[in-house]
Image: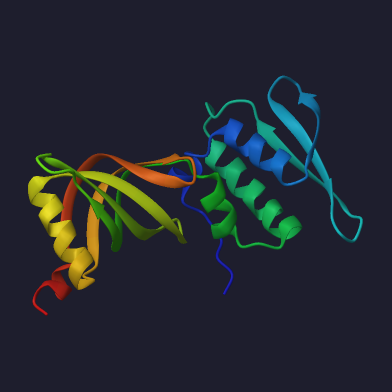
Length: 182
C-alpha cells in the first residue's frame, strides 16, 4: 500500500533547515540560491536520471505545506522509500498530539516526586523512542504499565532531541482503557 501525505498541518511543521540537512546527508548537491527564495538541490538516480528539489529558505508563505508535499513525492521517487518514512525523518516537532505506546523503561530516584519514563510509540508512522517526565501519580501508572505490559496514551508537544522525542506540556497520561480491566 502506497501512502500519500496530504496533512497540510503536519507538512507545515517541516523546518527548511532540517530539510537542507536531510538532503545533504542523503547525497543531494546544493547548486545555489534561486531568487533568494529557495535553494536548488540536485541528485542523480541510480539510473542516471537528474532530479531537482527546491528547498524554501523560509516557511512563511501560504502554500508551504503544498510545496513540502510535492517535495516528499519527489524524494519518494528518488529514494524509493515511503512518504511516511521520509516525513518521519523530517519531523522535528508535533504540537498538541496524542501518542499511544508501551512503557519500556522507568526511573525515579528515591525521594524524588518526578520520574523519568521511556516509551515506544508510533510518531508519523514510525516506531520512535519517546522520553517523558511524570509527576508521582502518573509515574505510578507508568510503573504499572511497564510491569504488566499495558499500553499507554499521552498527549502533549513532541520535540525531537537527538534520536528520540521528548514530551513537553504533557497532558492526559493514562493506561489504555480497554486494557485496564484485564
